[in-house]
Image 1 (cartoon, one colour):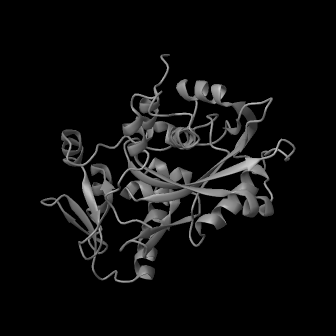
Image 2 (cartoon, one colour; image 1 turned 180 degrees about the horizontal axis):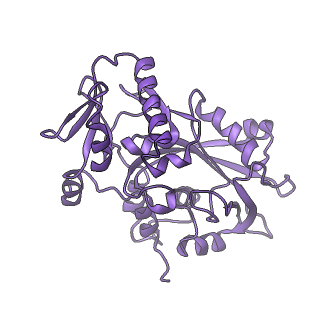
Image 3 (spheres, rainbow, N blue to C red; image 1 turned 45 degrees about the vertical axis):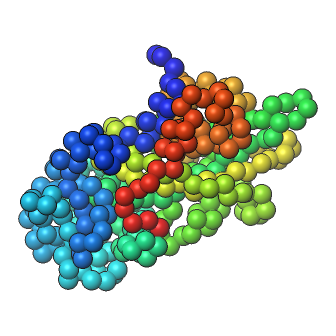
Length: 318
């Protein structure tokens, strides 16, 4: 298998066509916008077979084929009403086995925002791709800094072989979705304990916020369930510098099988071999850019890579 370039790795995560491109025009021609009850916000893109499942739900949605739009009915005018309606529908679809993606039911609510920074409704995590909704997570890279005798090394976990999504692929040291009602750093502390056994005091004292990445993913079968759902995502990124004698991360909740302490050459080899989960490859490339490993001098696609790691998303955000 040919080695993947850094730009090809970015394209695996940021795979939805860009607005104003011919590819976007073609893709959008078969998609419906999922809009707010006041018709002012495009919350996401819906595939035709999901639209078909909404057509008979006139008491919940207005389907406009002329505008290629599905809107929440205006009578759902509070967060509570919208949240109950969306989750009741998701549960019914799960019971009816309507969509395979709901077999990955998480019993975890994700907040959806409109206007930006205001919660519009909450919905079961696994149902978000059905409506193309923006979701959020935290990703942390734990590393041991270079010394006189050793190079910089990163702690890399291997996902459990029994996971429904991307089994046995490589991941960031800690990663998890931001569920309601948790905040960003609250989620980081929770995930660090659950996935890697890191003590909360260590995270509070040493984890460093280093920005965020955003991209627009088109789901494949490796993600679980049907292919083709659009999935815009924002990940808040953290670095954790560890000393040589800091106790290493360890599998706790079964999300990871093992953790490896790899130097950057091994990390780059694994990236090029396509062994990372697509969005965690993107986060790892962001780490390499920030730490001066990937530079304009050694990466011909530097500007495209760095811009696509911080994509503008055409929907209301957190």
